[in-house]
Image (tube, rainbow, N blue to C red; front, side, top):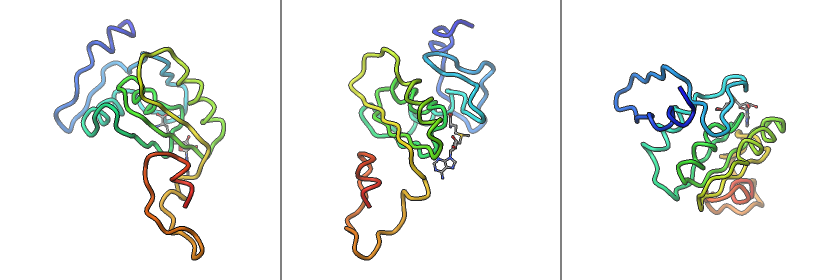
Length: 138
Ligand SMILES: C[S@@+](CC[C@H](N)C(=O)[O-])C[C@H]1O[C@@H](n2cnc3c(N)ncnc32)[C@H](O)[C@@H]1O
């Protein structure tokens, strides 16, 4: 099926058994990154659990599937990956024309540090999930 028709025919899953007879390949999605999602997976989850303008975090962003869907669905999103090559791939994948006020950022980082306890002399204020600077400021 043509990419745009495939996207237009997308229907949100309403049961626990999900089936995607054809992998989504709209926008800049590319199945080549090892282990990456079919875009229907993050699309379903984003639609189910967030609204336009909300913030999505993908702490293991890989090739950026979740952030591409976040952009298409007008969600702000941050993605991190420990592999700088993945970060480059994601950043490139997000460079497509699309009218949205939402913003997506991708940075190199280690997901294991997202929730680490502050050290004794660090600011112990709660992490706010609105930007990476705040996430990694701890
Ligand atoms: C299967 S891929 C994710 C694919 C992604 N869902 C997509 O659709 O493109 C897993 C990613 O997690 C990253 N990763 C593994 N350990 C990590 C860590 N501790 N912190 C951040 N990223 C990590 C890997 O570099 C890899 O890119």
